[in-house]
Structures are given as C-alpha cells and as structure tokens.
Image (cartoon, rainbow, N blue to C red; front, side, top):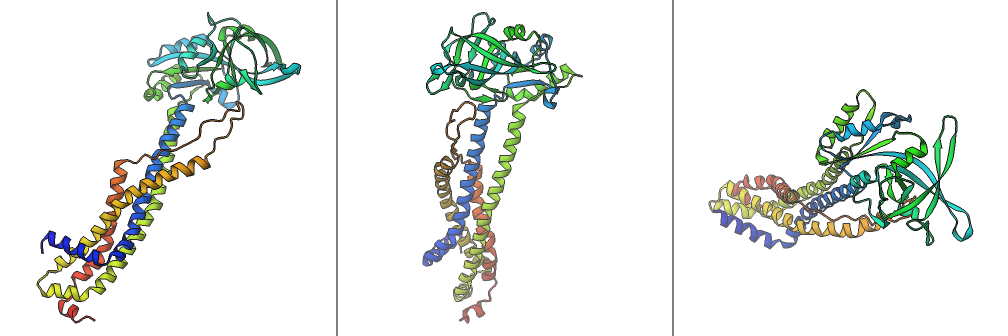
Length: 423
C-alpha cells in the first residue's frame, strides 16, 4: 500500500471514531498549549524584568565605592582619583558625590514642620551627563557657573504634599544637615537658593532622585571643609564593556580597597534565575504531554483490540506487517500533528488571558515609602518565540508517535489466521 493510501486509510479510521479521536487529542492540546503559554509568559516576564531593572539601574553607570563603605568604615576620594578615572578608555563622564542626610523645615499655615531629604553634593554638569534622563527639570535649570549656595530639589522635596510647595526658583530655604563629628553627630543649618525642581524620576542604585537635594560639589567642600568625596559615579560609553572598565578602575586604585558596582552582573544573575524558573515551569507542563502519551497508548491499544479482525483481513489480502505498522503509526502521528497545531493558538490565547488578568490584578504597585509616588502597573506582554513554538509542536508529535509505537507494533505482529478467527 502506498503512502497516500496509508494516510487516507488512517484518516478514514479516525473519522469513524471522531469522539474517541477528539478525546485523545485533548491531552496533547493541553500539553502543547501549556508549553506555549508558559514559555511566552516566561519570555515576557524576563523582558519586563529586564526593562524594569534597566530603568532602576542605569547599566552604563558604574558607582565606585571605597571598600570601607561596604564594611561600615569610611572611604574617601580626592581630585586626583577623578582625573585617573577620566583617563580610562570608555569613560565619558565622572562626578564625585558627597552624601549627607538633611531636614528641610517649612511652615505651612504658620505651623512648623519639616521633611527629610538626602543632600547630594555633585558636579552638576557632569552629573547631568551621567544621568541625562533623570535630570529633567520641572522648573528652573542648572545654576550658572556650577558653584555657590544653589540647590536643585527632587520632586518629592519640592511638592511636600497637600498642595504645599517648598518654594519657587530664586527663593531661599534652609537645610539642617547631619554631620558626623569625631565624638558626636551635629546638625548644621545652611541656606540655599532654589535653582530648579526636578520632574519625578524615581530611584536608581544609591540615589532616590525624588527625595534628594543636589548642591554643587564646590559649595559642599566649603561647608564641610573637606576636599574628599564619598562616592564616584562613572558613566561609560558601552555597557557591554562594563566589566572591563570596572576591572581597569580597580587596578588603577590597587592596593587601595576600591569596589565598582557593575549593574549588568546583577542583571545577568537575575536573567539566569528567570531562565531557570522558566525551565521549571516547562518541565511541569511537559508532564501533561506524558500523561497524554499514556492516553494515546491506551486508546491505540483498545483500537487494536477492536480491529483485530480488520487487521487479519488486511494481512490475508496481502498487506505486510510494516504496512499495518505504518497505518497505526500514521494515525498516531496525525493525532499528534493536529492536536499540537491546535494547541499553539490555544496556548497563545491562554498566555494573553493570564497576562491581562493575573498580573495586572495581583501585582498592584504600592506607593514608594519616601516619595509617595505610585509607580506604573507592572504588566507582562507574552512574547512567543519560534523555536519554543516549533519545539512544542515537535514534542507533541514525537510523544504521539513514541507512545503509539507499542500498540502499532502489536497490531503488525498479529497472526492473520488467528486475527480472522478472533471474536
């Protein structure tokens, strides 16, 4: 019997038992749909997490910290350290950072009140080059000359709440700055001229832009009487070379204990964990295919028992064992092919339903503790990939053929005389 005849005969047998064939397909459809849905959601989750991390961690910015900062000690950088980093290939902007905590007093309706902030002394021009998307002004701009007692307010510091604003560009305001002395912690009062207000920009690595007050580094050095910096922020040209640049920076400071935070390393670890989670989900969904395979074996075995006389007649008419084997394997492969192809759009539909309902309703963003700003909802867009889709279809077909092999071989080995006499 030729291939076309075998396929036609297999299709005819499947149509005779439509309900049984449909029920056999259900298991394969569920398995393939689960793989497609979970792989699409997994890829979408990985992409969404990467986008979130890239928004929260500028991957082209490297914070340079003295080793003592990580162990609770003190770390200091001087001007020559900045020049040394600027000479490293791939570095495009460098800014020192002095960090202090502060309290901004204000008197709404004549009542004394205050709001906490982080005072950051930076090279304002270089800092804007390092964070061009974060330094976006709602009012005002960078003070001319990048020196003097000028200040740029974060959005949360300016808009204190209940419709209260701290001031307008050109206004004076006070900050009580916490300064750690040798034996005690002191509060120093300083007046600054409000030069600009930032738009809401959230937080990144060590800096919450909405809760910060930025002043020129020159002014901070005069106030604190020191020419050192606590931290150095470095922007590089190519994030792909961040590990190389970080290594060069650490080598330049040797034998000093200096650490460089590389955001891409953290992101790679998160990507690895997400990929592992995705593989776990796919392993669980593959169980459905195994269960479907067992169902196919059971159904095909019952079919062989029901068609023993038909098999005997075929063999008596000259059909070879391999022809009978081909007929049953063709039925199994057709069931697997049709069911696998049907499982793909069903899986995509399930993925979109889950992304539209599950994540938007369970991952409700909370207000940030310091800024009071509610971030945008966390949503996932399913991202099916051709390799996963083709792989799911191939696995569905393979499971059908493998589990259909035993009953097909059993049918092929039947003795024609005994098969015809079978009741």
